[in-house]
Image 1 (cartoon, rainbow over the protein chains, first blue to last red):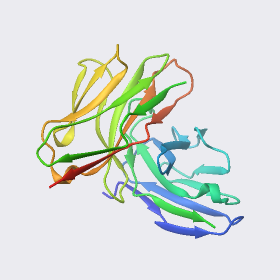
Image 2: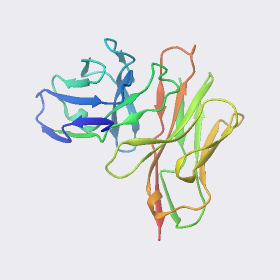
Image 3: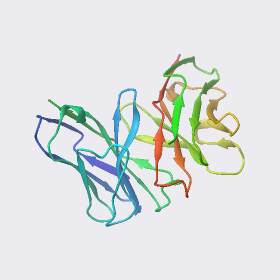
Image 4: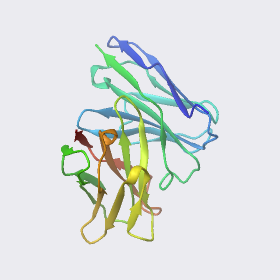
Amino acid sequence: NAGVTQTPKFQVLKTGQSMTLQCAQDMNHNSMYWYRQDPGMGLRLIYYSASEGTTDKGEVPNGYNVSRLNKREFSLRLESAAPSQTSVYFCASSRTEERRTDTQYFGPGTRLTVL
Amino acid sequence: AQSVTQLDSQVPVFEEAPVELRCNYSSSVSVYLFWYVQYPNQGLQLLLKYLSGSTLVKGINGFEAEFNKSQTSFHLRKPSVHISDTAEYFCAVSSSPGAGSYQLTFGKGTKLSVIP
């Protein structure tokens, strides 16, 4: 039981390049989330998905797109990377659609640097 | 809008001493409260959460927190820390149903350093 896995672990991009961050969970959870973590800023929600086929914007969605490919997988895409998107990205999942109260389970993170 | 303030960005404490990590929140509606811990180079994991009922919440690894509605606080405590408790701790607040769209707000984190 791997929990929440993320690929890649590290990535360096040039400004304007695109990439997709992959996330998968094997806990049969309904809800999935993408966060970014910046020094001294805590975590900020980018997008979330309460169930397969649905996605909603979080606090900082600009510059990102997401796809809930199936119940297991939730990807985050940067279409045209900018230096301001340099951050550590975490994917998380929770068991039900009751995202207000559910415990979230986090992946190990992806460290992204945009030059 | 809701917000979370973690009053200390860094807390050094000697091994086997007690520790309190402070968290205050502001919200115009009822909230649910969480403490998560992040060990170096890892994702976050839940320590404990307050949803309703008893205001004293016990979590994993000997941590506990007390919800104080009048002071809008949710401070985290441990009576005796261990070296392995060295980590960053995040307080988070989730808005209750009926408070509009879902919002989970994290504090900026408190780095706990346990000194041998």
